[in-house]
Length: 514
Image 1 (cartoon, one colour):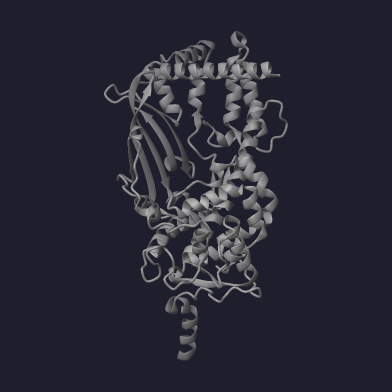
Image 2 (cartoon, rainbow, N blue to C red):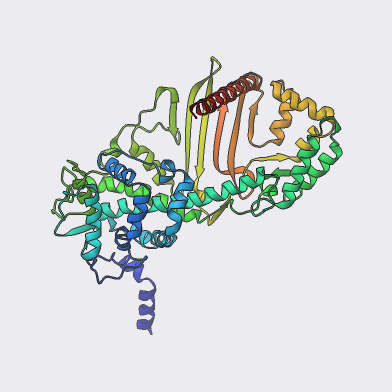
């Protein structure tokens, strides 16, 4: 009996007693069938013709430039979304959706297995056959003169570089899909003639049109109807005393899914870059030029030779680079400290991700506004403990207007006209300011004569709680509202006039050239 109990306990706790099973390190041959749960599946993805096609369509020069930046020790955190219009990315990648699904499966399974394994930095596996030939062919596209190695290996550094490239492609695609949904949603909001209400709640659109139509009547506006339409609009969703995005927009496409998986991926990306630095500093594995001491040719060293680089360091030097802020951007602090090196920034994120801490980035500087200098402050806050969820509803934010605001300004024609005129002229009374502060959660105003400030705040709420942000972006200008608004209004008018004249001049030049 004791023997049976012992065997049961042994089976139940085997992993804890003996550690995780070793990472698969058998050579990848033409006979090897790889699946997404196997970390070696990254080789399958690298050798896939669809990746080569996507890379070519996204511009081979861009791909080569990005790879060359890596080998020259330049840290590039740009995603594809910053190099291309998101709609272009969607057009290019959408026909390869099956391949994108393969990447997704690998990120969720094989990559997770790899980055949670304690022996990952010692990993190395040989690549043979057709897969090896395809990877060498990619290097030869960059430099036809590069020699094909007799043997090719994938080590920790190779895996991490490939992982970050594939994860970047996948999440750029996800961002493009989300942006496409956003664009369609906002077009519905702004297009009066639209009858498709896939994104906008039909009743909300009808009430908004009715309100705008009634206000457009000017002196003939019936404010009792405006108040009725507004009350109906606010009653679409709870709370009924606040007009927010949930009263206007359907959950889709404003629901981000798999947020926890995205934060896991970000964690592994940050962690892997720091660990590549440690890998390259490991003198038992890497020599003073960044190549393997055992002479084995890895994917990374092969591409370094294709670029004819003297050294093969991905992260070692970059992590020690000093962060130098332009003087006009003032002081930058990360979690209350001024980061000195790239490594300092990544280490703070590594400690907070995926769900154990928060990041607060602050920037304090001065800006010129019509010849006057004002101090300002930007605050970016990410609380990963609250963001780590299966999904996040982007409608759950502080962009809203409380019913008391509408009740006040729509009380009568005098109340409405008086408020809008004072707002336009920058002559709000203390009562007006109090009305704004108390009823517009995204406005930040202080009328304290000793410390006046004007600003805006956008935040994602944690489960509908305005007082518990999960993420926040805040801009505060240390100046009186009555000083700032007229200057901003003047600057905006000047910009609009200048751009209008510029556009008109361009049209005239085009006409004269015909």
